[in-house]
Image 1 (cartoon, rainbow, N blue to C red):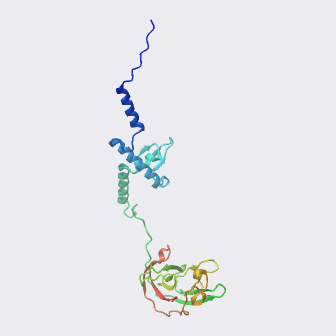
Image 2 (cartoon, rainbow, N blue to C red):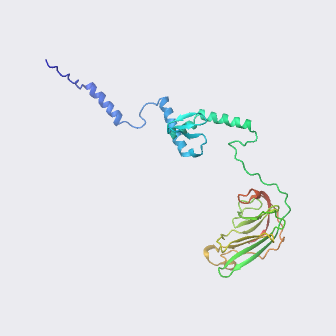
Image 3 (tube, rainbow, N blue to C red):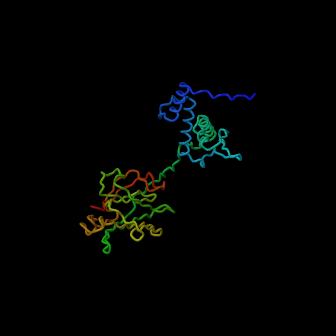
Length: 289
């Protein structure tokens, strides 16, 4: 006799209520209405956050312990661990095991090589402690360009005893960088430095300097040992005004070599050259009113 098919269970009120509850939980639930995450899910979420953060901040090309093997997986040469992807390796580098191995290796290298600088400390070139022989002689000439109606200054600094192979340097410094005078935004400073002389500075109007090739000139004559700098001020507002058509600023008379007395200027930094870092200096006269 043919077998009868088993009938499907009838849908009762209880089963329909359960299904509707499940559907509502899956499709109509609100964010944050679920239960408290377990420790396992919390650890997974923490590792994922660390992985995303490491991907944004760490460059694997600069990691000396990162290596990709012939199987396509990634290895940590410090901890001898294998990882399936870059994110997993980066999460490993933020973990306790990798950090402990880094600390152990740094301690071992420090014990083996006491003179080796630590990884955390960045070495900076120490400033040269040269015995200063005084201030250089200087000549400052006030000039006026009738064609462009602009004021200019010509600095000629004498360095007869400059070190062999050295070249003088100049730098513009704002009033807020110096600690000798009260801050005055109307002025700026032009500094000159060369070993073994003291660094000197001149106070000039805080007007924009035209640094185009045909308007700004700096030249060192090694035979005469004279450093020449000529600068032109841009007229504020692009037009003439008070002060002889220079937009409201004026320059006093020509300075004389060694004319005005100077006073000590604290440590200054002449660019990125360590020779001019931490050198004393003086401010010589005022080139503006």
